[in-house]
Length: 235
Ligand SMILES: CC#CCNS(=O)(=O)c1cc(S(N)(=O)=O)ccc1C(=O)O
Ligand SMILES: [Zn+2]
Image (cartoon, rainbow, N blue to C red; front, side, top):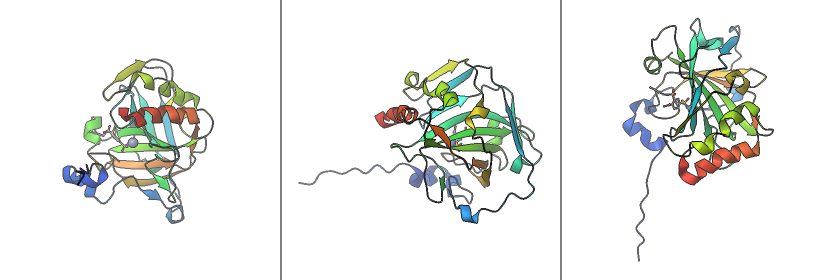
């Protein structure tokens, strides 16, 4: 008695069929092999400024949760970004289906419980986020590795809203003051490399800046993210 087996192959292995960029030469994420990283030499300091008191929207785009900055002003400059100034467009989080895995980047083969991405676009050279997202120097993404530890109060301003965006396309707007700078680690040492979006269209338009120091989130905050992921609600 043969049981019909249907194997649905989705995910990175099939992306190249629909998104040719996915077979490029600067694809992300990568494993950071720390022994092969060169020192930053005389790169200028990386500096950022974010607006705090403006309405933001939390959206369920289907691959995690995303906070839109709604065009309010901000600046990221210096470090590997040359003389260009970048502006924060959105920030989002990647979680795994079980604790202890879920980050996109790994460090010496080690995965973390999640990874926060703050997506900025080059306002010195381009007129819109969409235009910048198609250019090799168009985007700069700050990556923050997440590990289980103490509760993260700033991130909790978003995590507590997740029950209201349980399905793909759901959106909730909030006005509580929030400073994205508080999502970053205290020690700002980072690895940087030219890469791509980690999900389709996998465009090779991202200067990745991944902070070395993980940030702690509580087990409950991981569980809250997982429960929506595990129940197939794609948050
Ligand atoms: C036009 C265009 C575009 C890409 N948008 S994004 O850069 O916010 C992004 C960035 C990333 S990531 N993980 O590379 O930062 C993932 C997903 C998205 C997305 O919303 O599609
Ligand atoms: Zn991301």
